[in-house]
Length: 169
Image (cartoon, rainbow, N blue to C red; front, side, top):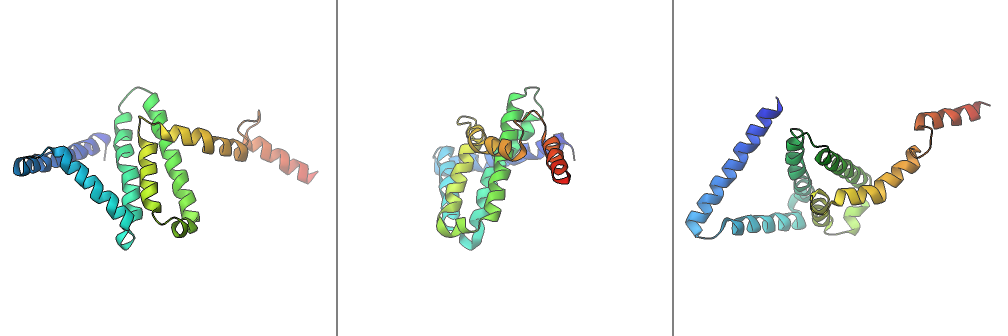
């Protein structure tokens, strides 16, 4: 499956959504933005209520769909800026999911965790806020530099080899 076919499928889905919104406008004589806002509110309530544990899935879908679509579009551009922004988002998204996987206590101590996570993912993925760059710069990069020693003139492999050699001596 190539990029063009995925893009065509996505465009077909967006056209279907437009058709549904057109029907909504015709039947209710209300702007389509009302339907979008109502859907967003219902979506957030479902995440908050976490019926059957669906909050985690809905939260991850919210954090996945727009960046996924943007990433597919970015692959077709020659600009490096959008690639860097989206790669940073995916690093932060993966880091957050890794932390979440290993700390089940989060779900116990924060009752509306998935709602907060969803809002945080929207903040991270928004090109207006550049949230992923902020989190990366404040947390992930310093942690990565400390763990991987990427700020030293030697690479992490060199540093590890030195430690092994010192143990042998």
